[in-house]
Length: 446
Image: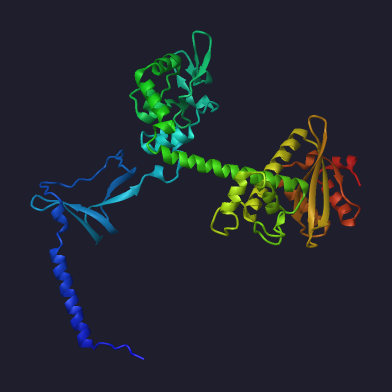
């Protein structure tokens, strides 16, 4: 076999010297970077302190005179060319690029019109997601004292009364909950010299007159037209991209709609979800995937989705895995409990049902259910939760029950009945609960 031959140290050093000389010759033939720029003389660097400075990519550039690593430094003099150097460490004046707060997913800046700016980011966000007029806000803070009496902002100012008796809502009018003034949304976003488009309006004595003049002004009409055009995909440069995003959103909404309906069906029937595997077109893959396979025979949309995203494994979103339906079940459970608590609040009085039962793994868990009468007169019995049993002693069980009731703001004082089995610990539990409300004694059930 041929063995690999190694060169001597002297030959290696000679080759390294030759390589370095070739690199120097090559670099000498390449034009210098400053040859591509024109000479600019008599330039005095100054600090930028304009808070309204905006670049094409919506970032704010501020001057910071401190040492940082890897910065962009601009220097110029009367005799030197304008050169852009990239240094590792600099002790001279630097221009640091600081992200604009509006680009850091801080949507709170767009909730109050007083914080709006006429930047493209703010305009696009408001045009896409809309804004709240804050009509139902508390107007007591908008108080303004006149010579005769005090005046406040009112809901009537958000409505225009036409001469034919028709009432039209002023959708463009927005109340600021921080400045306690009114703004015109389109004029605030696109710029206007009036109070409604600048600092805010709070002359409540002449409110209807001034606002009526403003909405008939040419500037307001032009700004409103610009805002409506921005809201429409037709008026956007990225129309195709916006349409693609909308189609993508609608697609996954349609997938989730079918998944949620399958979850509701299996949950209402008390059927299990999982099987021995989580693969489509496999035996014993569970009721969830099996139901989706059945649905795919009659629904081309879900059939195409399963063909494209089914059995792709982790890393590919499909909304068909066990993780998804477990999260959706948790969300549904929370909503159901909210509805039950809302019904209970309307009914006020209730009866408490507590029992201990083992699950499939023979682990004891506490069952809590409620009985009450709906406002329509129909009695209702609602299961609430399985709670891991903290012990078999009555004191421990009563503490668990009371903690659950208190955590959901269910008053024990409105309890009028108890229902348990005839086990000894349950009988003592009844007496423990009785200590919190003596009226339960009248309606005890065994």
